[in-house]
Length: 104
Image (cartoon, rainbow, N blue to C red; front, side, top):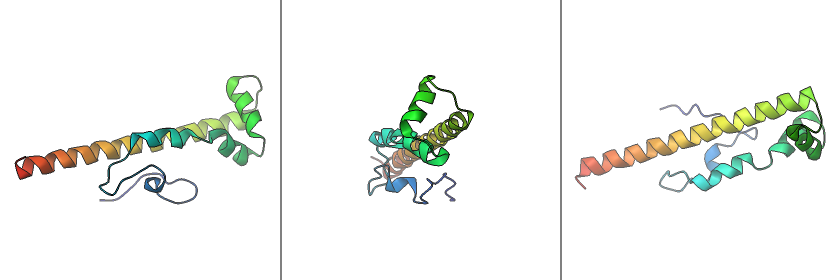
């Protein structure tokens, strides 16, 4: 089974950052981790200060470059969140099937 999940820019799998336990269960507490630092990541891509990204996000300033980068980063985080939840659903289904097969 191929893993087609998008990888973070650092190339490490999401499992290394999301609280995967040894049994493959993905912890939901890790979802906020995906959103943490979003303004800093966007600022690094665009070359501005994170506070400026925050102001653009709130509508106090306008910048097409920042808005586009922010939208792209939000889409990336949402995609990772969906992937993470999908993996958790698959893991739950596999455990249920295993219990069913073992008769418990």
